[in-house]
Image (cartoon, rainbow, N blue to C red):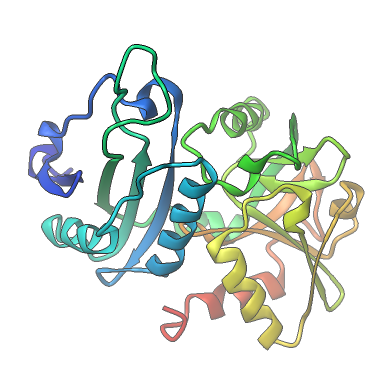
Length: 286
């Protein structure tokens, strides 16, 4: 295990030892979850699709009406990766509105707080891809009319509660419906279903956070000759799908083989899913 004292993070542009990093107790991120974050996979020392992650982060800050936007995120991210000598691992960028200016606690604050951290390691072991994920459909619903659906908000409680339902059921993930009964996404990943030669994924209008990996997979599978449809998807369609899988930056493409103790397809990672994962992991994609 690496010595935590020898790890570094970037706090507001300054590289500091992890055990010396400080953020104010009056920071609105701590007080209210008032901020956004991005999680990025690092391959061979390079953060994958960092431009796209940064663009989504900035878009989220604008949606939250941040009056000041952070600068130099990509430069600071590179410094953190270099300081920690990361080859393959995880980069996390968190931005909050910053420290409260006065006791009245208006939205205007000082400069935003920016914390960038990185750690070495493969997020998910290979054996998980060989057996696939099991999921439940959570009782927690998503409001597709909320502007926060498309923001990777630091206030993650809805997803945390849904993930708790998965843990209670000894499942790996929880799928979430919107109030109209359509599938949206899982707690930390986007959902895809394969029916014949058609790949289905919930539309943005269903109330999802459009994932960076989701978009890569949409483009990749289109090149494979699959018809890709983004639309509203009923829960029942899960159980009649030939295959299903989940995507995010850390898990990449994860087979989904069971939902609510009912098999998806033949309850094994699907052939097409495994091919998509193989192509996603090709060096040219990175």
